[in-house]
Length: 80
Image 1: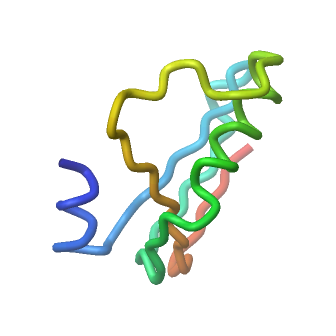
Image 2: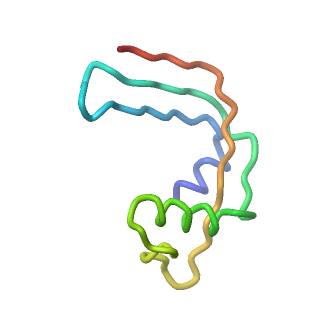
């Protein structure tokens, strides 16, 4: 459902919070300018290795298709 919504309306927002300081955060607003499946499986495997130590993402579902979204930032706000 998220993919369908992004393809309909490419405006996105990302908020990153510092778990050690709730007053420190980064907000990015922008548009998705590219959507691709190329490299998406490798990307999730790389993240799995980094965060779990596993070579492959363990929660892949049957028939699951992964995509990567490239975002062009339009507004950036940081605090802290």
